[in-house]
Length: 338
Image (cartoon, rainbow, N blue to C red; front, side):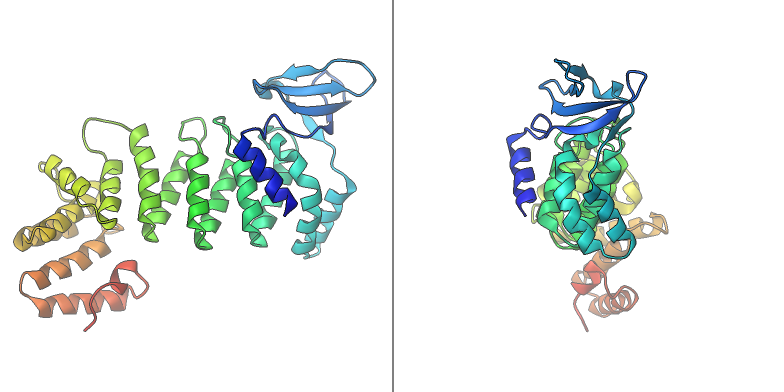
């Protein structure tokens, strides 16, 4: 636990990169294989290397020029690997907690051996459900705008946190991952946002969709803006959806694989325009792709529209069928039972 508090305080202070502990490594950047002391990073992000032969001074290297740097782990790390190989992950984690935190700032060095070690540590934290320290490690790996070799591992951690119902931690870590072309994480961030939405975490998903919309800003309403409006609707705010419907009257209901038709149907139903709701939802259901994830929710709202339009028997049959076919769905669980 002491490692967790140290990591978290360093992240909050914004100084993990510069406060890195000195460690030893072997470096072949000078054409040989020399033992050096790695002293962390300076204020500009340059890696500080010092000789161990008694000479004074230190070299400052940009991360891109570091090349092959092999950090020297102790026997504790090798013993942890052995414990893990013999099926004792809890013991392996206990040992890694003594060794790895000092190396976490250097995980940004993609060509070194540190990312592999930190990845192992993070996965064992997840496996053993040591969430506070896992979050602290994830935060330490996401405090820079630069691409990081372990961004994918942090996204895996975020998904584990969602499954463990630690949504606030997951959303906080997700907000720290940069949305730029160089990070290579754009599609993964989108996928996690969809996972949050599908689980009913509307506000957290809406925040991510808003970031995606800002990156893909355009004059015409985008799919991201539609998803922001969709989440707002489920948070009790109908205004974005209403504005979206008014701004897209010329678009087909199947736009965004049926999301636009769903929004039109919900807005019309809320306005008690049941015939219009039936038309929009029916058009969306017919035209949406067969594999569209929106088809189920469209069907549930369509049943609600039939009930509001004066056909409760048909509405109940639809809801019973949907509940039978999709018993674990967020939408069928909330539908009225016969």
